[in-house]
Each structure stands twice: as C-alpha cells, then as structure tokens.
Length: 283
Image (cartoon, rainbow, N blue to C red; front, side, top):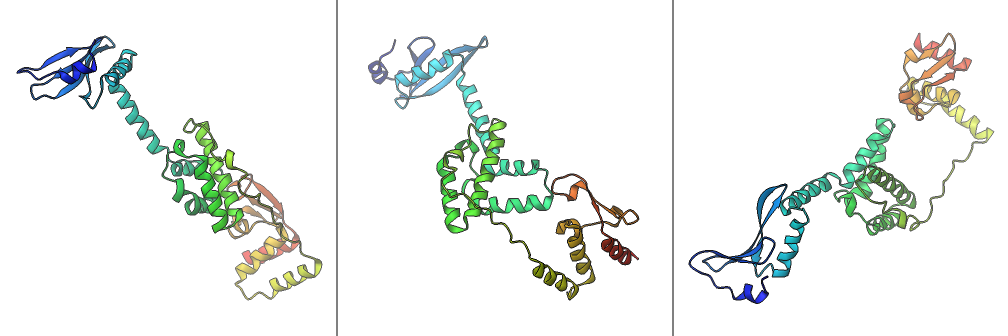
C-alpha cells in the first residue's frame, strides 16, 4: 500500500510509470512530472478504467474513497450520468411548471383557470417559480406569505398559501417532492375571515327592480338582468346562453355542464315572465 510520503516524493522518469496501491488503484507518474490517480476495475464483467483526478489535488485517502465507490458496484461514470439526469429532472420539476400542470388538471372553465393563474404569477412565481420543488423550503414560503400580507391583503396571502400547498400535494403524490413546505408555516398569517354580502331588504329590492326598468343600457343587457333575477343564474350562464338550450313550450332552460361551476348539467324551470320575455325577444 502507498503512503502519502511515497506519493509526494515520487520523481518523474523518462517513461511513464505507476505506483500501485491496492485493489486496482495506482498513481500514474508522467515524464512531465504530473501525477494522476487511475483506477482499473471490472463492471458487469467488463474491464474499465477511470481517472480519479490529479495528485496532490486529490489526496491518497480521497482516491481510496472514490475507489470504494466503484468497488461497491457504482461506476463513477454512471454516477455522473445519474447526476446529470437528476439535474435535468430537477430543471423540469420547477414549481411554475408543476403549478400550471396542477391548474390544467382542474375541471374549471378556462376563464376560471386564467383568473386563478393571476395570483401565482404576481405573488409566487417571482420568488420560487424557477426553483426545483425539492429545493423549496418553509423559509421561502414564510417570506412569500409575510410579504404578501403586508404588500397586498391577508386574503391574497391566504389564497397563496392554499394554492402553493395544493401544488405541493400534487408534487408529493407524483414523487417529485418529499413534503409540503407550507405545512410548518401554515399558521404564520392570520386566518381569513369570510365576508358575506348583506341581504337586500324589501325596499332595496324594489329600488333594484326599478333600476332595471329605467336602465339606459341596450335591450340585451336589460333582458339579461331580468333573466338573472328570475332564474338566479350566474352572469356568465346568462350572457352565454344559447337559444337551442331553451324549451319555451315546456318553460325549461338547460345549462350545459361546461357552463356550470359544479360541472353538471343544470335544468331551470322558467317563470311565465321569462317565457314571455324570451318569446318576444326571439320573435
């Protein structure tokens, strides 16, 4: 076995020569005075040789450690290839890409997906969008939540917390992340209190209906407002309604699943006022 003194005092000769350590490890001494570690081994019954670095940059003990890696059946070439593959995978597993993947998996209307993407693009992606999910820590999340709560509103910070956690739920389930970094800091910002809209009293309802009648907008807007009032349908459901979905003879309106938030076909019974209005409009 070699000693560090032998490695250090080895002098160059006219021809290249080698100083053997053991188990295939040797120090190659070149005529120009450079010294380099070489390791000859067999992997899958095939002889192979690998350069372990130059001496004294790579010390004797370090060269032996690298030799042990190969002796354990792990080729350093393979290890480097695996490391390269791992880096490529990390680059494809950045938070922004997984967040968009999570969003596309949702059974939401495209307009809803676009609206839900706005917050991450403003609040989350600038901070962690380009980071591999495995490198994102609770410290990253805490900074995002605290800065968002100060700069915008607690409601936006709460939405960021829910969204980031949902994205990590997907990343963990698909083995691209080990844990959800939101969990340790989930209580770092105050809870978001839901603010319900105040119900209209009879006087306010009367004033609202009077405003409908006295509206100066187009007749399309006028009919839409009344149809929403009579059916309690959502604005998008009313404005995107198709004549083919109205059965005026049976006073029914079918809203397709693609237009309904719950993604289920919804059939609404039309009051006589709505049937009369739509019949007039259609004619």
